Image 1 (tube, rainbow, N blue to C red):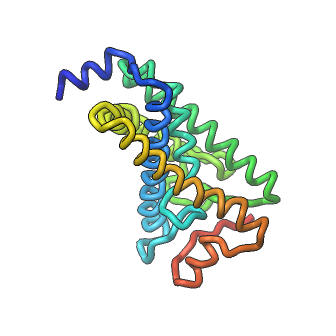
Image 2: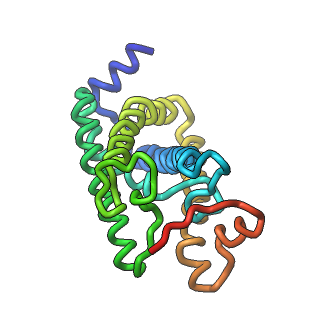
Length: 213
């Protein structure tokens, strides 16, 4: 095991393009689920530990910005993986910038829309406009270590030891289901005036976090 891990750290991968697509699909799935679980737990404590809140706008437990961030982190830090401090610092800064401009962009384009607001959250030191804070950036920096030193090696190992067709079928299928869910709730439901996940879940009794414009 140690020998394989050292190989991961010291040798660049040699996967073909289609296998890398499968690996990225798997990373997208795992990172989005990880982000959902983090926010599911965090907002439970932020809300006074009285109830759990469903996060994201999909039927499935997956949040897109974590998936986007994971791919960005991979490309920015994979070649820096021998230096843990570099991976952390690059991720800390890049994710902070991504979160700030994503939040600001939604706020401007959506006429005051906020999917998160650090102005009203606990541990919001270093808060900038409610779009990013030091706690969130530090968390993303630490999460990048989990991604680069555990999730990515795991995905590489699965791609190496599982039959290629089976690996691609599983990873691409999982990613496709999640992206169809995302595409439906983000575009199709709005265009065709169909019920979105949040509408259905509210009727069932799920709780959501609301942020004032």
